[in-house]
Length: 249
Length: 272
Image 1 (cartoon, each protein chain N blue to C red):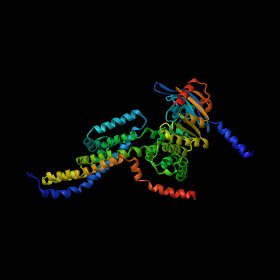
Image 2 (image 1 turned 90 degrees about the vertical axis):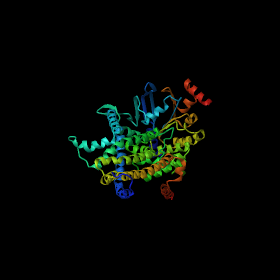
Image 3 (image 1 turned 180 degrees about the vertical axis):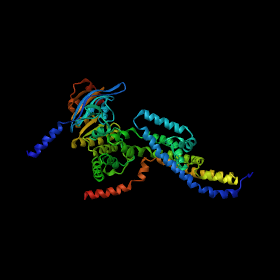
Image 4 (image 1 turned 180 degrees about the horizontal axis):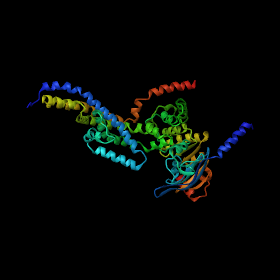
């Protein structure tokens, strides 16, 4: 048995594993983007004014977030092709994006919901009084107020998803974990490559979480008088002065 | 008198005799609580109406139903000759759809007790957003009109300020400019001075007075400012426990009312 820490293994494995980082990060962002968009789909479905429909949607969501993502991933990869008529075989990358993305979209839609609920009731009434269409009301009034406060929470989910993405190796999507694993199998040395994987995750996740803490403070004070005075809307102001003087002349 | 001016006067007369809003047996209940019990009310084009009465009498609910923020339990509200909450299809009356309602809602503007400005926009953007996106008007023209309106309410020097940087009275004046830029035929004011510090009430009433005297839109004001109502209102309604118990000219209701409940209410008010 090849026991003990060997620096030569460490230095040999490190560049190899680092090559897989692009794929891991790429997959993370793909899953995150999918979850962000699909989170809106849930919100949209839940606002359809039909109670039985909304209950059905609720139960589907509960089912999704109460089952492990790994099971969902396996289902999409192995079971979906076996369903008659609608069954399709998808490539592993798409499977991973769908599996992880849909699972986390349920959490993200809950975050959106909390943001939307935090918007003052008067904003809905004012939108109605000004006769906004449903689409413009969401686009111009509700979401611009609902989403910014949730950005730190969304950021946390990005980090969580980054840590969940190695699940994709189970359906054959290569990433840093896959490379570390095959290095271990080849040289029968798992200690160094898996330590490297741990270090890589730590060096990315931890600074990111500090960044998000800072973002949170910024978001919480975004409507405070001082922050706004610090950055006046110069572009509009300039344009306006010009047009005003134009008008007077 | 020239022919033209005779025509003008005739036009004004026909305008003034036209009921822009009619309430017919309108009731509203929240569960077992009957807020309004059969409201009948006519409002003519350009008329300024003040609604007064004790709190909980249903004053605000009357105008909230007109703004379509609440649906009446029964009865009809007619706006510009069309039923606000009902539409005809194949000869039978059915609940109005969003398209029908939004068409009529375009005639109405509202100023709220708590301003409800959009905090993520400058006050100029607050005024511009609806004309541009709802009425699809030309951006440049809307901007010019919005600036004029903000100047009119005395905030021409604060165009790029955000609502959080303004005082309550300033916010309420922006809210009025925002509603006016939409050029409604009917403006609703829901206790617009109730959330303000006493020293800021005057500046807001001044703007309303200006609108009342210079604009020809109909106005419905729910208010606790009796002297103000006496000054601007053509008609005053006294509402108590969901019923209009007296209506007439401002001086009839506020100065010479024979009704005991009205007198008692006004006495209480004057004492404070």
